Image 1 (cartoon, one colour):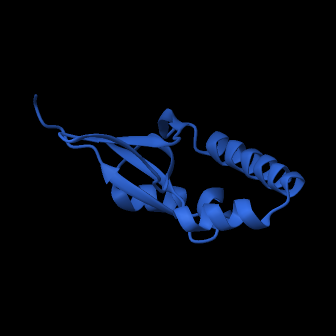
Image 2 (cartoon, one colour; image 1 turned 90 degrees about the horizontal axis):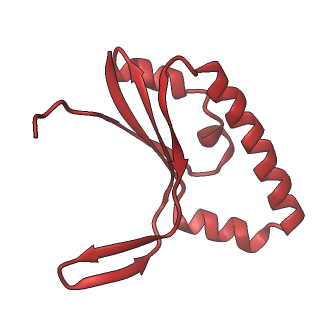
Image 3 (cartoon, one colour; image 1 turned 90 degrees about the vertical axis):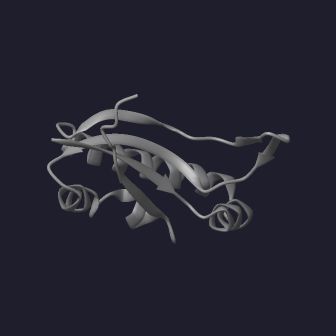
Length: 116
């Protein structure tokens, strides 16, 4: 079996627009619904999920010149195990993140097995 990191992403401008135009009570309701749908999806795929991951927040970008607060479109990550990239694509085809959030997307990367 191969390992894959899946990055959940939402364009910054989509999140800003949603936060600007959605009343707080509606944001809460939408968040709860998405959370329930994601929990059901995760349970359905629990045998393939080897690291449930974590939500990702604001980030600090560090270079040799120093550190700066920046916005990015990273929302969450998880690690799954599957025979192939095609199997991962099939597994995530009904993922609530991409079905619910406009313009959201997933980056799927195979974990290489390089010695360090």
